[in-house]
Length: 114
Image (cartoon, rainbow, N blue to C red; front, side, top):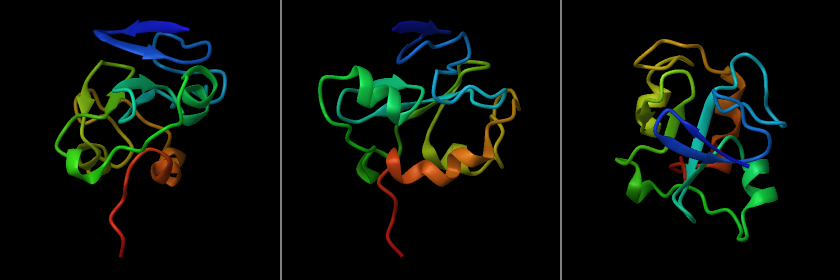
């Protein structure tokens, strides 16, 4: 399935108007993530795995300055740094994001090693 969320095309399984999918659909599951392999936004890694014709590639640190996260509430796109700096809310509209999403960042982004 594919849906326009504000002005961004989002692909995945049963997407609603705020990017919720069949895998993650709580009130706060309102982000979509851009995959480096196809420059396409998906609500989650499972949606990518089920609908893309290629393996997922995480967003590389070399592209950290580019927007890779979409707020499904207002359509704002942000970098990983923007997302992390705002305590689980959209920096533009302050809609709450699911705080549990941060535990899955390694599935979407190349993270610095400590």
